[in-house]
Amino acid sequence: MNYFKKMSGQAQSPPGVSKNEIFWSWFGSFLGIAAVGLISSYFLESKGISLVIGSFGATAVLVYGAVRSPLAQPRNVFGGHVLSALTGVFFQQLFGTVPWLAAAMAVSCAIAVMHMTKTLHPPGGATALIAVIGGDSVKNLGYFYAAVPVGLGAFVLLLIAVLVNNIPKTRRYPEFWV
Amino acid sequence: MNKNFKCSFFEFSEEDVIDAMKSMDGFIDITTSTFREIYELAYQHAIKRMLGTMPVKNIMSKPVYCVDSDFTIFKTAEFLAEHNISGAPVTDKEGKVIGVVSEKDFLRKMGFDAEPSFMGVISRCLNTSGCMVSGLKTITLQDILSSPAVIVTQEISVSEVSSVFMEKSINRLPVCDKNGFPLGIVTRSDLINAICLQG
Image (cartoon, rainbow over all chains, first blue to last red; front, side):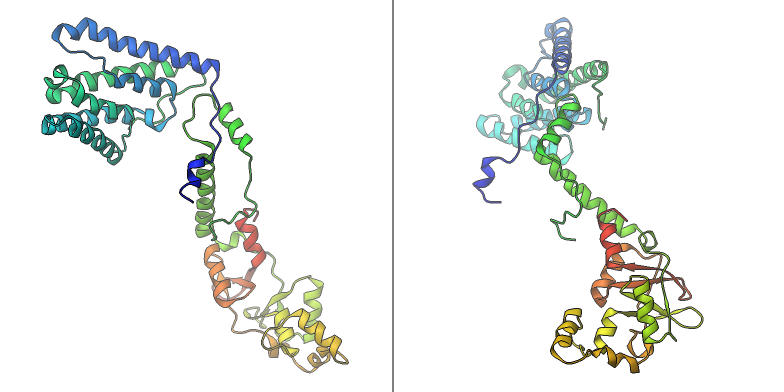
């Protein structure tokens, strides 16, 4: 297809969702982020760790708002976050003195790693980026960043997703586990 | 198979896809065009798989009308006309297939060795006094039948049959058992029906 013709777009935008769907997206994400925030403030922040990282907001969009998506399945959510975190920490430690390079390598390699492992999860890109730009509190965690907050937070979000998304008749979750 | 092959391909409108997505509840993160691509590729894949594994016995025509090798030309023509077919396997006294006779074989004997065609006969008939049909009176079925017969067993796949059609440029294939006795016949139209999943 012609290079410029491809830019004009081919398809119609998909339909919007029902009110019911909007409610369950809202409800699930409220509970998910609330759980992460509560665990963080009651158990972790006293130890100087926050369980709440920005990429979880993006994960919530997928696991509560687009539950059928391959990108929102447990393999992708957990695998994508943890592998991206490891990738991010690796490049933070390698190129930490050149932030733009560390950030670019962290995100691009995280995407490649997720593709290779069939764990593509868009918020993983943010998780990798946060490993580089997250400041000293993240830097000091080293590879532990991949376990807490990233691994634990992803697990909590998944747990809430499995519990909430199977309540309405019109939803089921997950489509597959691994 | 041609990539753009559509056959009786079920065409649905953009609205059909949108309606289907709406009825599914929940956000579906593929576009309508992605869905169409998946659907068309899956459809083609299914046809290829089915034709590659489906045995010819599933699509062949039964019963098969055979002409005896001792039929006269006249009786053969009458037989084909009676059953409204353009060709048939020729069987020996035991009933084994020894060849195939078709319209083309008749036309070839009527002076069209290169490209025998019905319109060729018409034009010649109109051009000369009298038709060449009379020439057929002196020959026998043995003179015109195509032999040895190209035959297949009923286990071979539909896609193999289509390559035999192409290679030998023929229109019908008797399907026989191991001993050469006819079980059915597969024609180009049987094949087309099978591809359209109407077989």
